[in-house]
Image 1: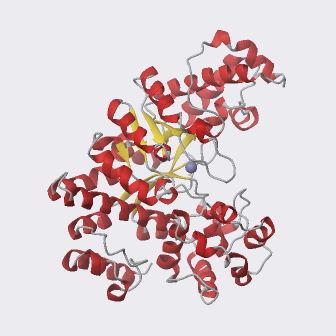
Image 2: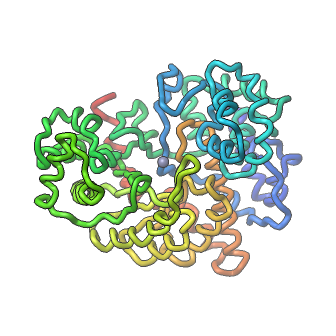
Image 3: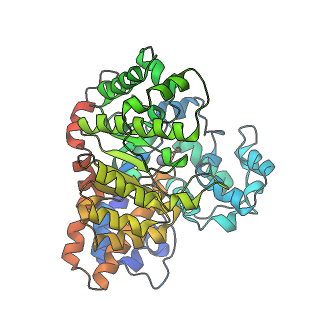
Length: 477
Ligand SMILES: [Zn+2]
């Protein structure tokens, strides 16, 4: 972004306080940069809250972003098919497209690297009206507007979108999009067991521990450690190696094992699973009960190790990415199982991700009850923006406000993060404004909550000041 444009943005922000939200969100008054749409007339955002929320830096507690240099070089990535504007729709709007009825053949053409980007609109057009207003669609629309100045995606604007995509995707675009546009202070990226980023203070990393417990993943986790694995205690040493090697540089440890089972891990002693581990190592099939006991044991081994290193434990809960596969009955049990985890390990700090959507009321109760339960709203604003606004509003009058983390883009492509961050800001501003309007809190108290929830909580929970100092001198850069 040019300096001139940055200044005009600041002017716009100042204007928010002066003229009020309705005018602020009105694109005819203030141009299109900050203003993706007309608000419904019932919406009232307090101008002082809007101004504060838009000026305050946000910490992004969850992303899957590849390295910028890999985006620029076109390095192979399992989720990146074409290096063109379709990439903005490839995660997660692609799922909404299939659910809306797009055929697999059209889907493949739309995301293909071999189809001319300017010919792709024809495949999207029949489904765009059905998906453009979902949270996934909305984040893309806002990104198109903010990054490429395209107000409405159509056959007439596809060329402008593709030109914008190419002009934006250049060295430095991660900082431009994340820091300048979305005003994000730092991101926490889940990419592989641990990624040594070339931008370690911006793209901070989690240690992903799912491969330590599910499978386990001898190749992906065992091999890099150089430890020859013959027994369960060797595998314990592999787990130790990851945390000893990278724990000081990681901000947290993360598992999305809830895609495969409930998070109802029981403490199972090593003696009870030694033989099972050997059986697994020999390549024999485990019974479901054996697999479960082994996972339970390894989960706690990793969690206890991470806890020793003061790393918060992030666990996926609730909704599934993709489509036509989601055992809601099991997801419904996530909040209850989360409560069990908190009770079993009072010293561990658990971060339950995605508000357990759609079972989010339970997650408020969890954070209110347990000292060591934190709720992360990552991904949630684009799954269901209205539910997320309601969630935050209820959370702030029920659970202590230092237990909430309000934003994580959860994206592979960096571009739609700007749309997701915009939606989070809109939701935070709305939630606080409604609380003031309904007399649940004073305006002064609402304003006082902005700093802690948008960055204060994350800075403290993940010890970001200390981590930043360390990450300024990483051994791999
Ligand atoms: Zn994620």
